[in-house]
Amino acid sequence: MASNSELFERASRVIPGGVNSPVRAFRAVGGTPRFIARGEGAYIYDAEGRRYVDYIGSWGPMILGHGHPAVLEAVLKAAAEGFSFGAPTEREIELAEEILKLVPSIDQVRLVSSGTEATMSAIRLARGATGRPKFIKFEGCYHGHTDALLVKAGSGLATFGHPTSAGVTPGAAADTVVLEYNNVEQLEAAFAEFGRELACVIVEPIAGNMNFVRASLPFMTALRRLCTEHGALLVLDEVMTGFRVGLGSAQGHYAQLIPGFAPDISVFGKVIGGGMPLAAFGARREVMQHLAPLGGVYQAGTLSGNPVATACGLATLREIQKPGFFDALAARTRQLVDGLKAVAADNGVPFSADCEGGMFGFFLLPELPQNYTTVMTTDKERFNRFFHAMLDAGIYLAPALYEAGFVSAAHSEADIAATLAAARTALR
Ligand code: KE4
Image 1 (spheres, rainbow, N blue to C red):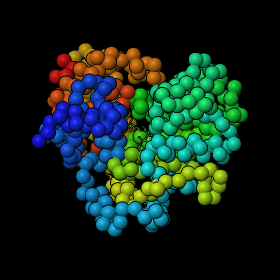
Image 2: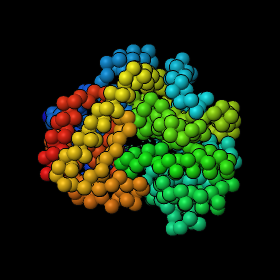
Image 3: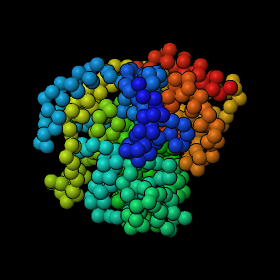
Image 4: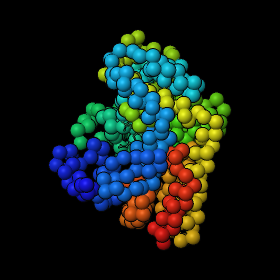
């Protein structure tokens, strides 16, 4: 049986950094990544046979836990009927209908293979539908790795964003305006300056890519009002929050707090694929009609609406609609978060945490941060020590202080208790 370090060394010879996605390399926290052999319920097992309580859940998709029998059965049945046809199938209609049933703000949806593809397409759709070039994003939000989205705040409002990645040209970043999350004044000023040129604003309604930062009510209200006033489309990136923070996703949560609130375009991923490559974007009919083959906005994909992935997503969405599913999941997540806060308080460690549905975040900061700058004031060394102490105790948390955590329906009271016991020791 090869060890994690042997596998990491072998992987690094043939795959850049030994991983197919950077966060998996543990570079933020140091140490050797665990190579996972299998998952079962709330647990993952590494190449050395060690068991971990899994709070990554593939970064959100595994809301039912690993190997849910009904999902496994649906996937095996679909696979036996054919992996991919490059032609329409009934199951794509079924999944689209299921999504529309759960997302009242959209009339139509297009299925794709990754969140990056979905947000990239949503921005192209917004630009095509409005005929406008610019869009706003926020520092600390991550929407996938499309060129125009790998941009950080420029110095001052007037200058546009600067690329955050090599290989992104100034031209590709030129129409991206990057503002501070939860900063209403900056939003007002940007709309005053660029309003008529803005195709859309794209935002994570709860920013899981800076761990867990909620859009404040004034911010979300201002976003909706300003987009409406200036004819820009409000794009909610719910790749992480969609069907994770509640059956109505984050938009359902905000619609309860802000009467009549609804986005213009919604982006989904992760949970709707149940762990298989599947994401989606949707909007009202008059917006979606701009998409090929009907309209002039081109968008396509060989494996879009893949028959096996749609079976996995559909089975997952059916399970989460069962009575009491989210009540139980939210209660279990709340139990974890409240327990962690209590353990930190007992040990005098500055700590704040929050959760919604099956998604949570915690900070080694006394107060919940409202933006990226504050999140990054966290003592990184202290976080890394905590992460590794928990990992060594068999608790697998996100290997970066800017990532959110996820609880599945398979996490038991005993798993939460074991996590809190490990946290007590680690925080001491
Ligand atoms: P993908 O292209 O990775 O499927 O989705 C991009 C994306 C879009 N929007 C949001 C809000 C997202 O969180 C993501 C991807 N999330 C990261 C975790 N922070 C995926 C993990 C990774 O990059 O390996």
